[in-house]
Image 1 (cartoon, rainbow, N blue to C red):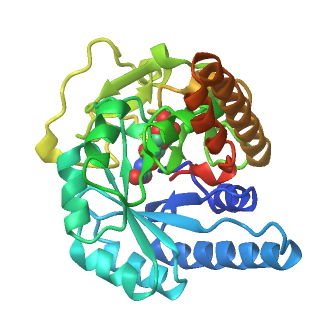
Image 2: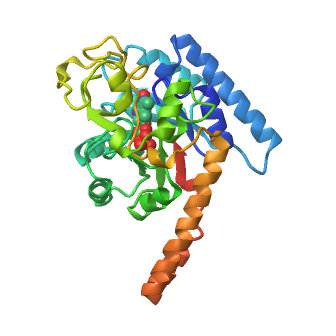
Length: 330
Ligand SMILES: Cc1cc2nc3c(=O)[nH]c(=O)nc-3n(C[C@H](O)[C@H](O)[C@H](O)COP(=O)(O)O)c2cc1C
């Protein structure tokens, strides 16, 4: 997540067994990216040496491949230097970027908001897809995850990581039921000691729920979800925001105010009612796993009470590993 995801957050996530990721643009200037990647690679390798029975999950970086990103070549060279295992690309799939990542043995997942972009991404060589459904934090789509997954699974059998308002273990199980392989979780990690968000932002996440989220394109030119309170604090009326001009894409602008998107206008998804306190990453991961397992058991019981054949299907899914279904995000 822009501004929020730090090496501390990523390292804690990977050590807890989930893929942690960050946008390369969080490391400023580009030379800092070298230091961050060095630190992440070194600390995870040390963890693996000390805990061979519970090695860290791989980490990922997010690359904005849009033409306004003039750091792309330098950042990609650093990802090659550190052989970043997973690259998440956003805003316009590119064959050259995919080929470069494949060149060092990395894997590319592209994030998409509809089936048309999903098809383009795979045509251009992405290995997997991250459908960003309605209700996701930051730049989000407007489509129901049911519709999005249904359309993508009609033609794509490769890895799919569903994103949008997933904040409870039950929702991870639901994502799998919809056909996703993994869940992509963003906003809940804001309210952790390891995240780079301000104390007020973390607190706001613990207090918020879906009705506190506003969907607007005002701040960056692309539609996204933001916390209502931060918009009010910037002196704007969240119920009467002007439309932005999408031809003026700017990923750091504060729209019509002096407040800067992401720093003062706080991104958040609709799922945050599940986040009621600031807790360490490892604790939140354990909670998600426990919720997932409880939901599995409840579902199995529900299916068993309605049909014998259905119970057999639910029984098979009990072998699924909750932590392998969970992925953290940029
Ligand atoms: C504050 C914030 C910043 C984000 N920044 C980025 C980003 O820089 N690049 C990106 O691909 N996605 C970004 N996202 C979107 C996430 O990758 C992800 O799709 C989203 O958080 C999932 O929805 P959820 O927050 O409801 O879990 C951001 C999300 C938030 C909340």
